Amino acid sequence: MVIKRNRTKLPVVVGAVCATMLTLATPAAHAGTAEDDHTATLAALKAFQANAGPGAAIHAGDAGESWTLSAGTGTFNSDRPIRSDEHFRIGSQTKTFTAAVVLQLVDGGKISLDAAIADYLPGVVTGNGYDGTRITVRQLLQHTSGLAAYTPQVVVDEPVSNPDGTYDLAELVRKGLSHAPVSAPGTGFTYSNTNYLVLGMLIEKVTGQPVHETVTRRVIEPLGLSRTVFPAPGDRALPTPAVNGYHGVRVGSFYFWTPALTYDPSLFSSAGAMISTLEDLTAFYQALLAGRVVSAAGLAEMQKVRETEPHVSFGLGIGRKELSCGIVAWGHSGGVPGYMSQTMVAENGRHASVVTNALFQVNQPADQLHELLDTALCEDAAQRP
Image (tube, rainbow, N blue to C red):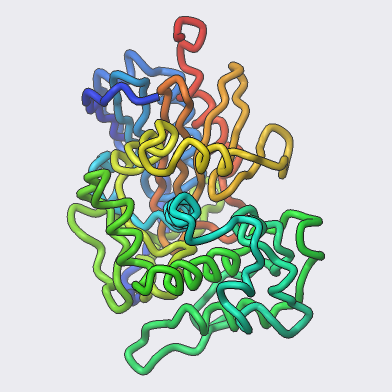
């Protein structure tokens, strides 16, 4: 077990598979100063990592200071803690960036939240029971459009790729819409990547630029997120330094890991293609809540939520979580081959961003992740403003 302390001052703003191994889970343990100040969070991190990937890390703190704890390893068969400045694939946390750009275009009068998607993309959301004249931009952002749940995958339910192995947004959307609707528009919540792939097409239609370029120009660069990347189709590299991602299973005290397969980022595009770090993700969500990404009116629209499960609600590209200490935090989770992550930021400056370097299709450590985030965000809550 590796524990690391990393203090930084923050602005005060509210693949091919290679060798595998089956081994007994007995990681080495090293003490560090962070465990003295954050013992409850450390215990929760250990419990999460014991049910997650080879390694896990949390970057957390308040409006003035941040710290990092790491357990396990970012590279299997080595003793290398995950650092808060290392790159990993953030999966569906990309959706918040996509939603922010849509709201910027709403701010600029280019898009209306309550307009039908067919007004902008005629003939795209149609057929197989879908009618784009009855589905609004707001419903796509909030997963209330009725579009079926769909996760683009290679081999299983695979979209048709281009000759160079990249994927077009239109093809991803076509494949997603081949699954029948799950509800009438506006009547139910169904989390679907297809919603955000359609929104990627919307951004491209309105701006005349590829979605990865628009997100970079409108969000990443203005915020100075130097370790955040929306890769172009065909750019499969993970920048260094990087957390290595793995596939695997856990059976009792045994685990089995293989490096995550390499895939083209355009497979997930505006629904999940981005790369970032724990530090940059924290900075992004802090800036969003502070009104530095979209207007006050746009942020208010994003924070209009509907409950999806007890104490958890979803707005327009961002979720709301009520914590055990009474704090309300906002953020998003993400999962793609090799990684599972989540970032939550409260309006009082408390923040926590978590990553583990494996993604499980079954038996995901969701309960342990919730407990870890809750513990970190509520740490010393009685003494906080």
